[in-house]
Image 1 (cartoon, rainbow, N blue to C red):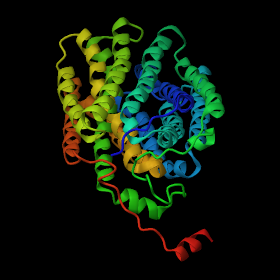
Image 2: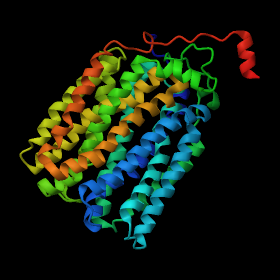
Image 3: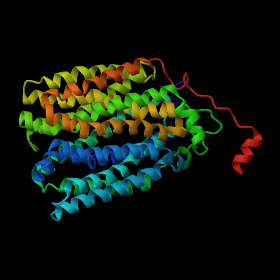
Length: 446
């Protein structure tokens, strides 16, 4: 694998103007997505919903997101990441405003059906977010830079959890509860304007030469041509590495949302930790700190210890998930349980960012980065949907004692899958595409 290039200060500054606003935008997306999690106990209490009913709302959103990222990935690869992030931002801002205004005006009938539909539409627009970020960043970063960058970008995502969980908890504790939807709507709208002004899809659009990224499409003669189904079948759906990553991200989705969707009612019902309290802030701030530490550690280990190989460090993090989840299930106090929420997030968010963000760029290449990111994120949210309806019903039946034990097997399977990819890199797994004959190329162009 080639060494990372040395960039000029001007290039680095312009690249910062690209990825930093995108990171802040995605953080506000989390605020406008996980507000449902923060408001879970409020919704269940106010509208007399049990865990299975609340799970229906969450599952509607998760599965819509899953279908959205799978369908929208090729679209983002065709029309570019900037357009995708702008569509995501305007749709997310509008849907959160609608939900907040409905509750402001006393909405109280058919809330289960209405929230399921509205939250699903919100999730559809948000499904463009991760795809667009991967698509925009892929042409700006060499493979050898992406591991550490993935960790830095994970900080931005973790700030989204801070906005959603900690700030959202403060909002619920001090303002009318529907403001947990209205305030994120305003924040996303601001970032729409910022992205429209600053983001460029490729270095050449900002006046810099195109970068040889060293990824799966590096050196391909057709890397700038639009993605079509034939390309996807040859490059993506026949690539065993990508298919294994997809299976692993299914496991990550169940683990991630199995924790994130239910930790608020867990802390309230088991340990009597309420919104706005110190221990609630310990848990929610721990999500941010854990995500930052996990993202940076995972990225550093990948690039420095494992020579930019992603599966080995993912395996390590999957194994750490098992230990930390079992510890959470046997926590002996409210303080320990609150601390362990963030400790678990270190291992969960680290591997999620590595596979969904960094590995998708590496093995999808600049051309198909959004498509692969969509597939990885899509199957993750298919699994997430099971944590709503299925896990919610199981919690109603078996209680909190079985909660983490139902999550652990998915971490174990994810770790086993990573063992099968231990030495995989874009260079040694690259799928060679036959170049079309001149007559064929002319026929396609016609």
